[in-house]
Amino acid sequence: MYLLDTLVFMGIFALLSMSLNVEYGYTGLGNFGKVAFFMAGAYAYAVTAALGWPVYLSLVMAALIAGALGAVVSLPALRLREDYLAIVTLSFGEILRIFVKAEQWLAGGVWGKTVPSAFAGLGLSPKTMAWANVLLVWAILAGVFLFLHLLMNTPYGRVLRGIREDDVAVQVLGKSLVSYKAQALMVGSAIAGVAGGLFAQYIRFIDPYMFLPLVTFLVWVMLILGGPANHWGALIGALIVEFFNRGSRIVKDYIALPFDPHNVQFVLFGLLIIFLLLYRPYGLFREKPMRTGAEVEVSKWQSSP
Picture 1 (cartoon, rainbow, N blue to C red):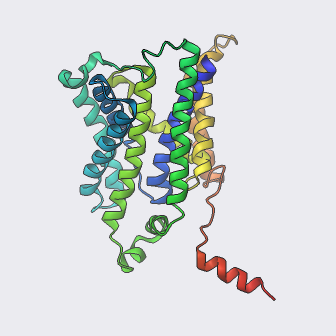
Picture 2 (spheres, rainbow, N blue to C red; picture 1 turned 90 degrees about the vertical axis):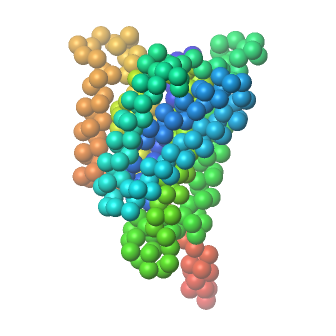
């Protein structure tokens, strides 16, 4: 059962890692408030599910609410320097958490809110329900992975990479930087909202103390470890970090240690990030160069006798 639980969390955090990959990996936007949109999706799902909405509509609402918040937060900050976006998103995460804590009418305030399971009333055994959650999370993860893979290999994806590399050149070509950056944050926030909805559905209870800045830190570690601007890197990085994160919780039950490995892992993560930034800044998986249709035809012409 713990293995199935780990698989569910791996899938949820892989969604968060890929959402940050859209913003930072491809567009170069430093979103340090990722937990805010994760929380927004979780609470949107909790409120709508309590009203009796089916799981797919609650997940759609989670994506819409989180995406809309991403657009609202981004528009004022994107007209300034990039570091202001990091400050705004980080502040927004804490402001949203404090707001949810204070407003009990919204979703229980500090007492939290119970969330109905998508599989309640089906008469499933605990193990079968765990497998159902694994299939639900990983099916959505596979769909998001395919969607982002196709999206980033279109002219739209090339514009996002261009903004990351040289936004002035992209602006000279007539592209609206604010519009494209806001769209990237909306897409990333919407995916984070879906992850939050799946999290709330699986845990079946949420409160503001589950959504601390530490969540954002873990997602950044996942992406930097796996490799920005690489979908497989974002996925594998999330699986590795979450495996150690969940595994460190039970190590002390099997091995007698003079310290808590769950606390030590954050020191190790910090050292790992320093090592990666110094010696392997592109992560475990390097970004793959994008080849357009014109480049493919030119290569064929050059290779022909």
